[in-house]
Amino acid sequence: MNLIQAIIDKEYNPTVVGLDPRPDLLPADILERAQKKYGSGLRALAEATYEFNCGILDAVADVVPAVKPQSAFYELLGHHGVAVLERTVKYAKKLGLYVIMDAKRGDIGSTAEAYSAAYLGKTDVFGKKCRAFTPDALTVNAYLGSDGVRPFLADCKNGRMIFALVKTSNPSSGELQDRLVDGEPVWRRMAELTNEWSKGLRKSHGYHALGIVAGATYPKELSEIRKLLPHSIFLVPGYGAQGGTAADIVGAFDRDGLGAIVNSSRGIVFAYKKTGEDYKTAARNAAIYMKEDLLSALAAR
Amino acid sequence: MNLIQAIIDKEYNPTVVGLDPRPDLLPADILERAQKKYGSGLRALAEATYEFNCGILDAVADVVPAVKPQSAFYELLGHHGVAVLERTVKYAKKLGLYVIMDAKRGDIGSTAEAYSAAYLGKTDVFGKKCRAFTPDALTVNAYLGSDGVRPFLADCKNGRMIFALVKTSNPSSGELQDRLVDGEPVWRRMAELTNEWSKGLRKSHGYHALGIVAGATYPKELSEIRKLLPHSIFLVPGYGAQGGTAADIVGAFDRDGLGAIVNSSRGIVFAYKKTGEDYKTAARNAAIYMKEDLLSALAAR
Image 1 (cartoon, helix red, strand yellow):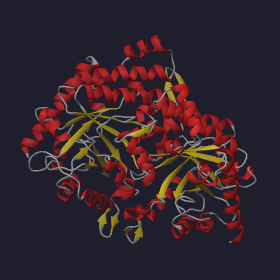
Image 2: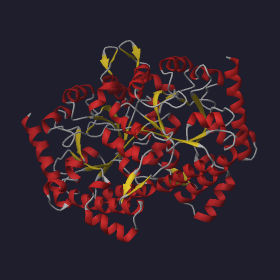
Image 3: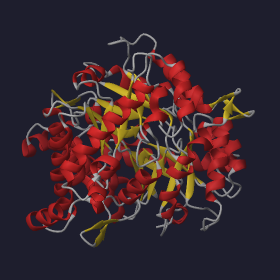
Image 4: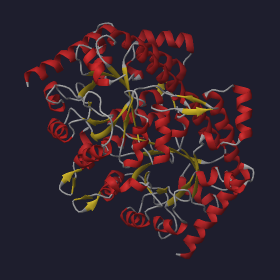
């Protein structure tokens, strides 16, 4: 599936729901059910996570085009969690959602090939080609340079893509990323590198398969990176819980109002903690609110 | 367990065996056995990997102080691979080895907390504290700055530690890492950042828990980073298959010949492909050869 097409198909909605199922925030009834059925170990917590995720996915599947599971919250539960991550990706895809695995992988070439085979490509298993995980996209940390990125690009077929970190949303991102390299900040050098690596990639709807990550919490940098990279899709975290507003994000979009997707995790999946509604209803309402918030800001610019 | 103590205990040996079980290089008899017992899917390949790993660990446990499983080669096999990764770590620890998980994780603060809980800390599972994975150390990508590093440091107790990427061993590492930041290369700025973050950490044998990764393939940089970071343990990949020699690595050690550990993966675990010996014998001999090679180079400097 193509991400931009998915955004357009969902009545134009650039919202991504981040599936960060923090164990301590899962609804009590789900936890109780899992504990009764699976005991009190990591497996039970993983199964609770899966039930929670399915509820969220059912609630938002007709509203948003894409979801972004954060691998850390599954690895936290060991191989049981990773099994649930695989099942979550499959369930989301069955519902027609574009799935971005947020795992920020990155390594030397031969290891990047293995990561890419795991998430975007295929592995030879006794003569049969298998995909271990089945997301449509993966986030990548490109600190190691092109060796660590090209293996992923080679597997970006049929709408699959990667998002390389350029300017991250966290408060300390500037410690390295804002330092000046030959008069330009590191994040700008990283943006330029992604531009070099994207040369020769096929475009679809005007965008190639090498997207970038730039945080809603740094609106000025977002706009500058957009000018540098007219053909990249931006994955923009930091809206909501991290403090980014819709107005902060408009610079990430191009003149057609396209080219960016905005993620919210806690603000959607755990909205029920604030509203007191059923968690599915709360998530659905939060996703609808976010869509309207983003579209109003885009219309107003 | 303390890493430096482990090196000293193994008759002073700064060698790390990298557990990179590439499926296409596993011995045919192990693959056949696994296929007969578990069918022809990812589980069978994962079980073959586990048998292979146990053989390597048995063969090298009394020679080397530490092993480094590379997460990519387990994720490649989905949750079956991750289950085998957990079991490999446990088996290695049972044999008294220090285990460095090479996963190069790194994310914003709240996500880094989850990664840290998964690999170095504990997760609250229905009121009981559990560790999903049980390595002694984890490699970390610090492109995101201190937010992404401090959660790990908070979990570095009882000899546990992290290794932050500074100058990686791959050919393209210079594309970002060698660029000049305020007149200094990015790798140097990263080294200085780790120095700042290590302030206030307790030392054991003169070293703190924030180690760094610097490649054998860049000997000049290795020596410079050693001068900057007298109290950091260096994890040095790139020996052997990647082209680094023992002479290239001496600059990573301090005046006492301590402070660095050198990894070899393919050169040890798949040595049988070159020597024609049984894979365990070949791995053991390659590990002994590497120890002697490193110690000769250290004695000669």
